[in-house]
Length: 138
Length: 410
Image (cartoon, rainbow over all chains, first blue to last red; front, side, top):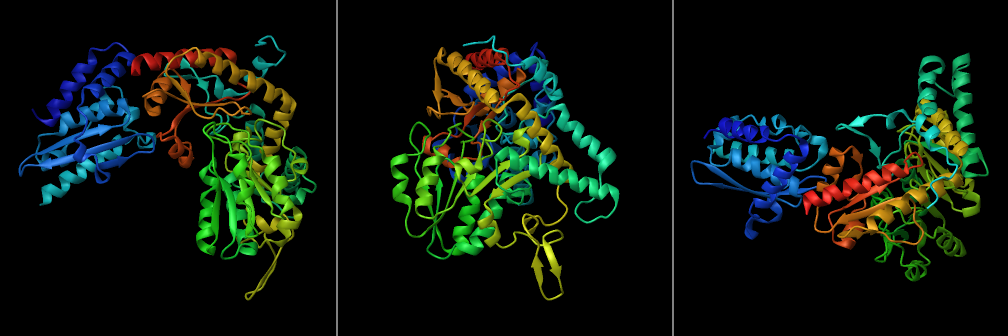
């Protein structure tokens, strides 16, 4: 499944919900379902600091594809980062570099993409892109 | 709880246009007043009128508008003097805010009076604005920061205060009211102890001026700092009160127009107080509108404000005490209307997001007081801070919103 298709699939899932509360309950469930990041990866250099919530991000490259593990101390952020890793994991660095992330906005969570909300998500996406760029040039 | 008191809440709310809007489909409930307060119409009108009719640069022009703007700006300084009951209006220095007021003292007092090996006393309850400037000063000068420890109730460990003084103590810089926890600190005691040793005291009054009567002569503090925007005035304006005897001995903070008496290419001499500390064109409109804000507060009545806000706090505490799974931070017996707490096991950010969806604005995070959060071992708190324009009904809706957030997040 391409990054585009994975995003469209998430947008369809969220289209089922009637109001914001159901969306947030689903995100909270996604956050609860996301396995915590491996203890070995819960290190300072994998920490993406937001003003409010923190995100841990670990990248693994098998020579072809990048996969990501993520975690957050805030459950709503954790639910959203689980969607980001679902969309971006298992793709080549070049595909990730080229990807335009539109699903967070389209499922009605635009405020979480605002850099001023300082929730760690924007920093996480930047870090993912930076990893991908580094591997795409390797 | 007496809800039928004669506090004119409906009339007051009419005066604040920003309160009458919807956020995420709900009537806004603004409980982030410790960060910044909304503005009454009279303050907005003063700003607007100034820019439409009265604007000119001050203190220099001979023409009508300049003279009129200068008069208004200086009348505002006099209004601040009266509000704080300072002895002289030249003891009132206009700044950009509390942070700049404190930085001014750290720089200027530090330059004149702090040497290597000297000591500055602060407390573990300080906002970063009243911590970082002193850290910078101490690093520059080779001085040491001594810290009043905090107790689990969010109060100064008062028994430890006196032992922090030494013959090397040059200044005490502490908050009047804690922004993160609402604790009203026993500043009178520390001022007495400091003055017994001829040590001056700076009070960070950012969280006190909007909520209570502050009398700098009665307190006998040497410096007092506050921001207009937390006291219903404009952003970008603040006040530093300083006793004449200290301000006179302190060198200027910044160079530029207004702060000079004479300038040659080789050397300059300084203007008199307070202009010595007011380089450049100030926020004239903001300075003038601060007077409107203070007048508005005085019209409502400082005692009435304090009493009403305490009732709001008590009602919130009463609601939360009926809920399970609330951890309180800051349980001092003497508090301003600030409620700092966590839902057990829930990150404050998540609570803030859900409340925002319900149109309820609270602050979440470390409130720029990271040492307090480190003490409690938490990433931050949820902080509801009340103003005199909040209603009992809003407090009830806040509690309902919190219960909903708890159901969703637990």
